[in-house]
Length: 199
Image (cartoon, rainbow, N blue to C red; front, side, top):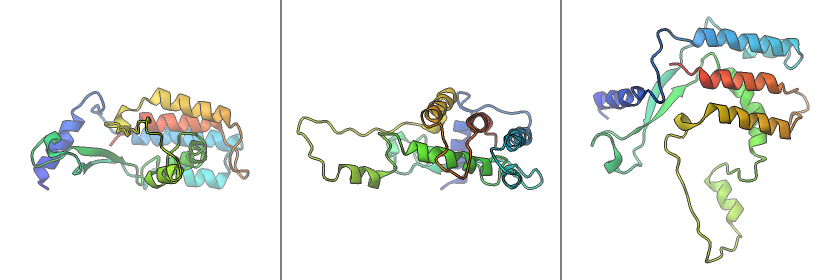
């Protein structure tokens, strides 16, 4: 793949002000401090232990800024490519070793079991096949698949937070008896991370 075409595709996306904006300075240090404040409050309230706080809080001396890269969508029709020799790229903002990488795993710990409770939850193609394997298909039924364009950049953060708050309300107790779930703390961390993905 041509390096200059890859860079041009990255700039094409990053210059879309609907999804991205230029920052005068990085904000990940400020975000790390806010994450630590929320975690300390959760520790003081008894939702996490001191050892958990030490593990989850960002390590300012070792954390790294997130970095942006593209996964080229080579499976898409060449007619849809922005350049004949460069497919559209799927934008990724890596969270590895960032201020929020451990906290994201902590949030996921609470969200995954609840996501699986939704009646229309499909984990992957194999899960879908297992659900329909012995189903009789009526000839009048329409089987439809859909693909969401730019899923992550088109998600509305307010609706995400509202949806998570609703599922927490529906299942008010932690799925894990060894941990308390601070709904307020988890939602606050989730919103902070979703709104502050700088790279």
